Length: 236
Figure (cartoon, rainbow, N blue to C red):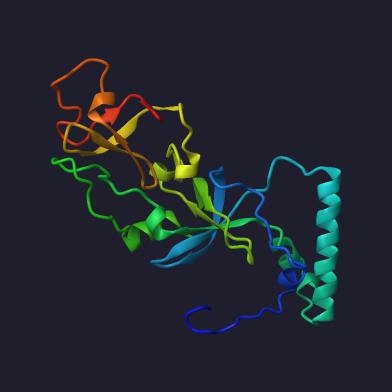
């Protein structure tokens, strides 16, 4: 920890078995997963979701490598006298992929629109009672989207279940493809000079200059009430 100057160590067998490499999450960022199950709830903070088993089976080489790694973990567990891998429930649970959703990315606000002046609204905080109703132990989440797999040690992904994020065109600027047409892009702000600011998803914004709004000169307001949606937007 750079702030406290504390070095944290671990005796967990699955971490000692990394042999210098980091654990890898099999699902890439942006993947949408259906029907995950809530297995832990932290009130006011978030929830841990168990992802359903993958429908695609690994090839022979990948399966052999995975089996060797599991056997190595079991041996380390015995050497450390933990004996956790001898417990059937623990061994089965260690194979389950999990993702954590923060309360801020769990549910969309009821009115997720701009105000009449075309300015975005202040950040919304999901009420804890509403979060508790949607995320109870053993309940199912219709769909989630993987946002980050950077927790390299524990192998737990970060995800979002809010519909606006699950259906977002892009997650980061790296996802933007020049020449691609993005449809139904919400306008979030009017700019001086006639341009507009659009939201491609998860805070990734784009500017459309006035000269690229229409093929012909127009005196109309593309977003009179701040709630318009552009039918098409091409990345330059």
